[in-house]
Length: 294
Image (cartoon, rainbow, N blue to C red):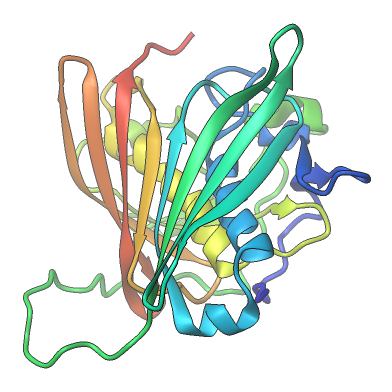
């Protein structure tokens, strides 16, 4: 598989691979989510779906022929801080389309293996665009930060204080400063379009540099805090993540721009556009449930 050149800023990772069963991933403390210290961050699940497809369902030849065009991750329940069992199945392999299902489960005491999340991946054959012009929104003409921008400094002294660790790096377009993203930070209380460049600082899998697909799959989960945060912070938890890609991004920085938020009866929908240094690459959409933070 083709993995990116950008080396993570730290030698840490969200998962260690089991030594005997290679489809079992042991989470590290850095994989904790913002809602509950006993649960994982949603973005590591979308990253695992992308990793599984590239690792076990896609040959190098196919990666040159097919484009991963959609990744949908249904989040069945809060993912526990327990080893995850990842399996996949090719459900359709045609000349122009390939569909892969990915299942993520975890063995819970007294309940056996419980489904945590399900991924559905659609791959489409690359070809030339048809002739003629079709309307599209203007590209986001904002240069990404330098690939050589220094990593953020650690904000804590140990992995047990994960909530304060800069496990990703964000540059807000408005102030053009490299800051760790803070889901409770004041930037979330500003209304209006949010634009930011995001770069992963940790590897998804220990000892493996993340591919471009893994990077953008993880960033896709930011559609929830970016589109669903308001004057009272983030009070929606997403039930899914859907990433659409017209092409695979290049470079370590992924640009994000909120484009839609709507909510009624405690159910929200949010969409953000995604960019790289060459322009638009796709969108990410989430639906969410109203949930107060404890």
